[in-house]
Amino acid sequence: MSNAGSSPDAGDAKRPGDGIGHGRLRRTAPLAALTARTAGEAVVVGLRSKLTGADSTEFHVRTAERYAELLGRSKGALMKAGQMLSFMSLGPAVGKDFQSTYQAALTRLRNDAPPMASEFAREVLERELGNSIETVFAQFDWEPLAAASIGQVHAARLHNGRAVAVKIQYPGVAAAIRADLQNTELLATFLGLISGLSPRSLSFDLRGAAHEIGERITEELDYRLEATNQAEFAELYRGHPFIRVPEVIGELCTARVLTQELVQGRSWSDALVADQELRDRWAEAIHRFLYGSYQYFHVFNADPHPGNYLFHDDGSVSFLDFGCVKRFGPEQIESLNVCMRECLRGDVDETWRVSVEGGFFSPSGSLTPQEVFAYWREPIEMYWGEQPFTITPEYVARLIELRYSPTGPSANALRHMATPATYTIMSRIDIGVMSLISELRATNQWETIGAEYFEGADPATPMGKADRAHREELRGASSHA
Image (cartoon, rainbow, N blue to C red; front, side, top):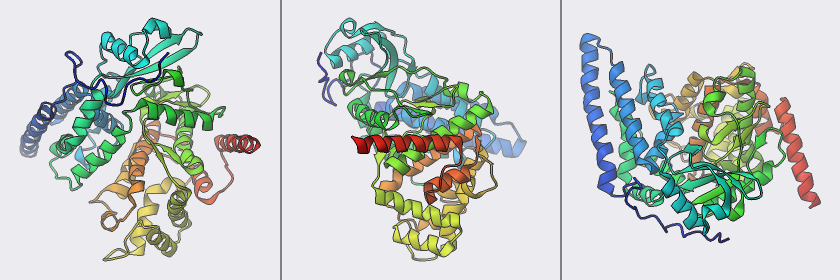
């Protein structure tokens, strides 16, 4: 069977009925119109509320539904960006009374994305794999397990009896995303909905934020790259006690089809209502997978999205999506670790020195050592506060304000930041991971986990001990080979 598939740009042209329009004006105009309309209505609602005390709940519910519907139809970059917002704090854009309203509407982009018709899924599969569905699969379920921004996943069974999950990229979506990302106004217009929903004007650079999101999305278009990434992680975590990575079926992976071992487990919505003890274990598993991979293997799975995880009753978690992966050199990791180490030790002057030497801050103007120390230390109370520590949405909202708000307590430090570009994606990872863990309201001895990462201390939690035993076994097998 052929595994050559098609070139990354083949098959991108829109065909009648595939539902993904590529025209720049066609994709930008509806969003721009809705954002402008929302901004105008927000002014009216705000004035009415001030003058008469009228309730604005209906306005926010209606607006959230409008955006969810439009983004769900758009697929591509816009829908992906909407999914990102669905589990992150909307910060200063939306008042705390209405945060849940917008997140509930946007959550549908994760769970209820409109799937493509089976005839289009079949067309992509047979073109990519070079054979009929019946030749490749003994069974194929045309009802998708999940439908997201770039592709959808189907359950199937190979002729040898192995159950697999098959991810199929939407026809035309790659070209649509590339058009979106070339049109810098499109994602900027989408992010502009944040200022449109708020009576206040946000000061951050919308176009810069759009560019950062765009780089992440671009990496997910080539499923061959994702298959390579996933195979690397599967090798690192094969046999791990609580981190599971499905095996890739390499001969059934192309630029637009990814086939992997089928995994069953609880969804994110199910995990949120599980017993707290399980949620605590799942949170530690997520934390150790994301940050442990970075600390010990120098690689980040850079898309901390709840739809990418499945949860198991033994406290383990399966990680499913590896389209966006970031690699670091040992010196880059140590440069950041030493800043965290010194601030956790409480040494203001040494934190200042290593931050400047590492290129994170420019020692000019009004910036003080105390401000740099506070920038690093204050957001990470989980590592130095009273233990055990519970990570809540309120804590993460405060973390985001302290670490990233250009008008918050760290405003002067942010003005003097000179962080190398290679670290840029870490802010997205940090916000995403912590937002997820906060929804689980996880309690743990986080201070001891921080000591493992930044001081090289022995693990103190049962999961930490099991994780280290796996790494030692992995190192032993590697040196024996």
